[in-house]
Length: 125
Image: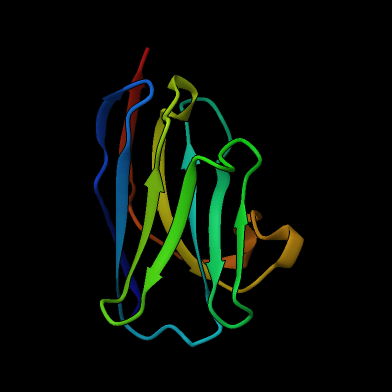
């Protein structure tokens, strides 16, 4: 059974950085995509970034391009999200997810079968 456990959340001031990690256990096929999503109170869950090993593709939401970087360490079975230049609007619960490559539709939650419990990120102004 696949399990995803996020860590690295916390509270920072605007302009600061955080690095989120997702520890993956269980079998995930080689072509799977790993994604990061976030959900703020009262808002829908939205895709932040995804990395698909099979096709070597990475995807980012426009709101985080140039500030966030997703990376995978297959040897350690982890997926990380480096977040720089954080803004108050980045405040949300961040979730790690595993699924299939949706291409330009990568941010649809329906492409992801497995989800972590989330880690909270709070950015103060």
